[in-house]
Length: 170
Image (cartoon, rainbow, N blue to C red):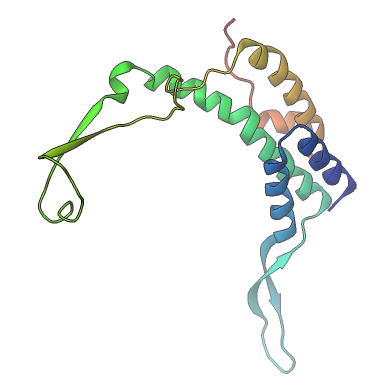
């Protein structure tokens, strides 16, 4: 693991994001699977087989930047999109499930049916997390600048992979 990678993981731990640092450390330690050709002594032709190799420093940094971009750039955008398209009262309605012979025969069901409420949210919150304006207008652009500077193929290439959101409302 490179010194830069170790420093980034140290910063993540100090920011109480140790679980991301753990994920990165494990991914880097596992290496990458590749296919190589090798020739056994006395064999007339080479054989292809898979092997595990360590990441190059650039590949290691790409893995780190991609992981951080997934968590802090793409997930907020996905939540915003999901909230816009799906966070309507009727999306998370009561669903009645009728008892059917066979599949539900072993379940301890009282009465003829039971209901479940479907949704993605924590108790006391709405179905979709709203990232506040300060995160979207201040933290996210600063994070994007840092990640694009760390991206081994340059800021322009980073923007191709992680384009700016269309618009941020205030």
